[in-house]
Length: 248
Ligand code: ADP
Image (cartoon, rainbow, N blue to C red; front, side):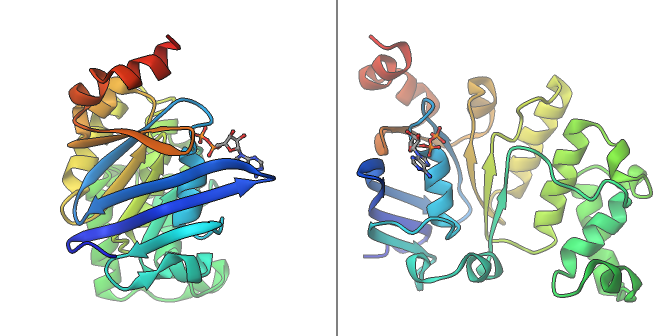
């Protein structure tokens, strides 16, 4: 049953690979406008979880709802993306030869081929939206730079901007601050806090300093199951979590 005010409802989700349960009766509820961090040791099922939410992997059992009406287990990957779930993988994938502005322009017009998109004229409204996103990701002064010349962190911000061009309701981000400088990590925290409320965010992250700086609520995965939930301080004080991380 779908809870009111949730952007994502997962109930009793299981995913098996040759009999091995990557997800095992997983239950997860993410509220509208929430910023949730998912942590857990390697192999806990974090990637499989994101694959289920984006339709890349079909669960063997369980229910998955987006908002109160959309059954994610019956939708294609493309339909799920169009419905408003945006995913960012760990490595940035931007068009290096194109400018920052052109990257955002392409992200907005996903219905056309690359060259048709770049030739089509932008409406005033579309231009305004690109300007707004450029300001949000702090790349306004680099708008004409080829994306290939940006720093690693800036490429990550550009890719987040490309996701924002599609107005997603839920953003899934996989280790967003891996490889970033301290300043870039700090800006990412600011950016996520700015985005929450208007969007819901699910962030998979290993950097506990970063998790502590952004999350209201942390979910610890272990062996495909939710081991603990609460504030970072709460889950870090949980005996079961300590055991899993320290192998005691
Ligand atoms: P995490 O992202 O938390 O490191 P994963 O979701 O990648 O965890 O993996 C969870 C478990 O499922 C791991 O033991 C992994 O080896 C296994 N697994 C993931 N994908 C597959 C697959 N396509 N085939 C077989 N086993 C898989």
